[in-house]
Length: 327
Ligand SMILES: NC(=O)c1ccc[n+]([C@@H]2O[C@H](COP(=O)([O-])OP(=O)(O)OC[C@H]3O[C@@H](n4cnc5c(N)ncnc54)[C@H](O)[C@@H]3O)[C@@H](O)[C@H]2O)c1
Ligand SMILES: O=P(O)(O)OC[C@H](O)CO
Image (cartoon, rainbow, N blue to C red; front, side, top):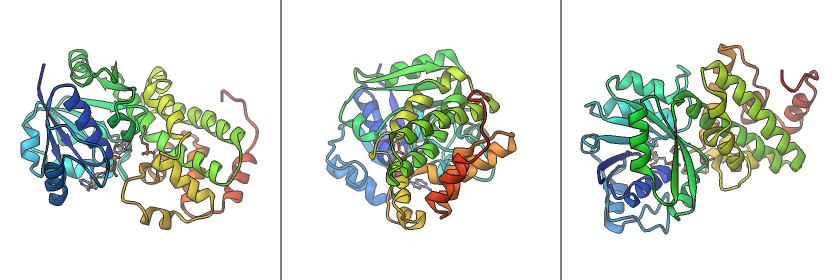
């Protein structure tokens, strides 16, 4: 059945999801905060700054008017995580379903995106879409599977059906918190894997970091109420493996530069697009400390982002007291 779907945020991922929704047969209203980008998308059917060379569906119309997008029964929210609250605060509320697609944890409050959305839109049902999804592959129609989490069984089935295409396969889940934590934590770990690659520390080290990183993702997730099955699924382990394996990841490539000796400030100043892990890392470290969870890889990534030398940080990581693998 054809619906109107609102997409809030016209970066790479918002635009890719708009294309998915259009391919599934829906009319799409795509909100961008930059009026020049709105005009360019509507004039050229392309989002050149974020997804160059991808012809967008005629079913997608860009707009700068959040009220117009809010009229849709479903809004996909795809801003950077730290902008989520301010954008939701200005989004007119009428109980529309909010599908949160950003990966991060709010600085200061340590709130997950679903907690931010519940505070700003208490009448809206909340869902989370997350998983191993490079935007440029999704827009090329390459096969992709995601977790679509929502506490309400009828709504999650409905959303999965609305967003499914022959190439885009949502798996429904009731575990909103688990789906969010996997996506937020993997970005931090991907920076660490990039450092390992950039510093030439080898494939053994990268595999060790993925496995020990997954252990700390699981510890933190369980402490915040996630289900271990979700963490081992598409939005957790699946996305961790993708993002820790490819220079196409902005987080991995940020780590690559750090591993080669460049500073975080210089690397971040150079980019137009968001590397969420750089914002999430210090927030995650604080949040983990708040629930008494040990996250040594996250701590190491924070130190590297803060400018400490790779040799020192990796040396300290390896010199910690030996421990049981399952502890
Ligand atoms: N790119 C991907 O492959 C991908 C895949 C899955 C999830 N994500 C997640 O989706 C979110 C968005 O990522 P992206 O790739 O689209 O980022 P992007 O850098 O491509 O685009 C971000 C967009 O947000 C806008 N923006 C920045 N600050 C804003 C603010 N304060 N208010 C409103 N809009 C603002 C920018 O103008 C831009 O249009 C992130 O949390 C990311 O982790 C990205
Ligand atoms: O480019 P990254 O590192 O933001 O990763 C994009 C997606 O989150 C991969 O699932």
